[in-house]
Amino acid sequence: MIVVDTTILALAVGAEHDLREAARRLVAAVATRSLEATTTPEVLQEFAHIRARRHGRADAARLARRYAELLSPLLVVEAGHLERGLRLFEEHRELGAFDAVLAATTLAHDASALVSADADFGVVRGLHHVAPGTDAFEELLAQA
Image (cartoon, rainbow, N blue to C red; front, side, top):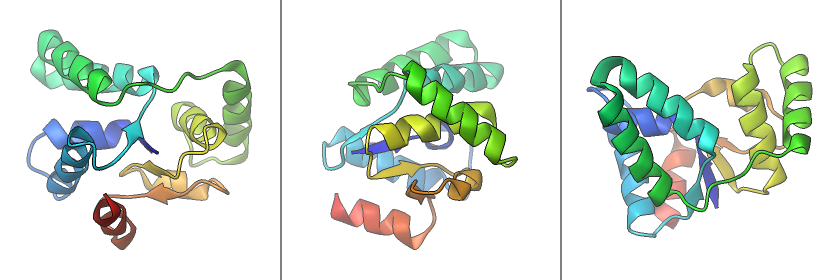
């Protein structure tokens, strides 16, 4: 099971971008059940917030609901994940608090990878970060 970050969800339905096609291929692999993936409610909340800025709240909510269905069951962030995430946040200036908690939650659930276009996840020891457009990303999809 992999965990998908906001960047992948936004890229898959966003405007033209170098990584859009890769993000769409990942979402398609999940939709056909070739690849097991999940995320957190917080990622979906962030996606809706970002999407609503350009496309309105109704569109953002509709897509967030579709992603929630596609990626269910969703991971629940527990108090221990928050604490570990805050430690990561303190230790790594590159990581924002949101990303640090997502990394901690991913680690706690023993996910095989965290897929994100955000390179800052690479600083977290023990976290297998896979970025779209890389050989590791293509290998992940090839296994699907």
